[in-house]
Each structure stands twice: as structure tokens, then as C-alpha cells.
Length: 218
Image 1: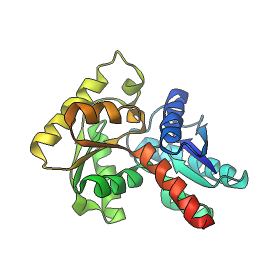
Image 2: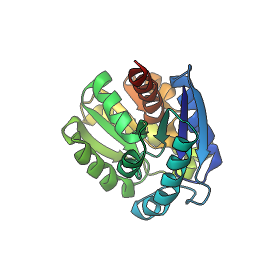
Image 3: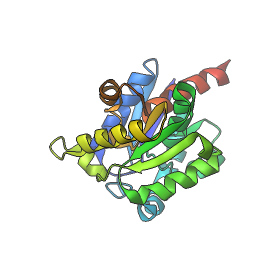
């Protein structure tokens, strides 16, 4: 079982982080992380989303041609997800959509904690597109740059944690979805800290991808 994790941005450390999260969630699979080297270093808003799309689709084509069993697009905005699914016959998962479904299964209604306010309209549009808007109480921004999540000294993690605390107090949810692939290594820590189910979309996508591969083989 081979799952290719495509990082739509050009930051290699984020690719490696996503690959580790996928391996932890799907230990029986061979996980390959791919970086879109010509993309922006972070996907923050519609302009970056538009730039990365052709590079994502090129990597989708390459992964499918090379025999991947499933593909994960490891950006929470799910850039080019519909187009990717339309051009290959294997499962293609977005970490946003996967995170939403996992949150509903494990916690019922959920809130999202993402990076910057510019991401909120994109995520709200995606929720509506997937038919899941009613399950999400609120999309929250922690006020951190994506690349701050790659720097342990930036103070980004305490800001994310504080926003989860506000969501727990104000939103009445059973789960929080972390709204960035750069948060993939934080779920267990933040779940223990807040006593609330915290979902990492990369791990959710990898677990779902493995299940879908097995269903197709069955």
C-alpha cells in the first residue's frame, strides 16, 4: 500500500512533518512525501492557493502514473481537490475534508482553529461545498503565520492553544480540527492539554486513505 502525501507549498520541513503524521496514522502503508518546490513557501489565502494548483495537479499526475494507491493533498484549504479527483482513478483526499469528517465521527459538532483570518472564508466555502457547514460551529484564526509553526521559538503554539481554549469555552463543541498541515504534530499535545478531541487532518486523511485502499481491494 503506497500513499503519496503532496505538500502544495515549497517548505520541505512541512512536507516531512506531514509524512511523519501520515506514517503514524497508517503504519502499514508506505508513505512518500512530495514537495511542490515551485509553489509559495506557505499557502495563505486565495492568491497562494491559485499559484499552487498547477503544481499540485502535476504531482497528482506523477503519483498516479508511478503506481500510488492513494494521494493526500496536505494543505487544509484542499487546493485543486476536485480537479485532482477528476483526473485520476485512485482515491485523492484533502486534509481539510478528512479532518471535518473525523471530527464529526469522533466529537459531533466541531470548530476549526486555523492560522490567519484570510483563511476563514476559504474554509467556510469548503464546508458549504462539502455539505458540512451545519456541523461546524465556528472557524477561528489563531493569528499565526503558517511558517511560524515551523519555528519553535515563534510563540505560535501557545496562540493556537489559547484559541482552542476559547473555542472550548464558547462554542460548545465535541472536537477541534487543526486548520493547517503545519499543526500536524500538535494534536496529541493539545488534546491532552484541553481535554477535548483535537483532530489533525493529515492523520485523518492517511487513516481514511488506508481504509479506502482496502475497500477497493476487497
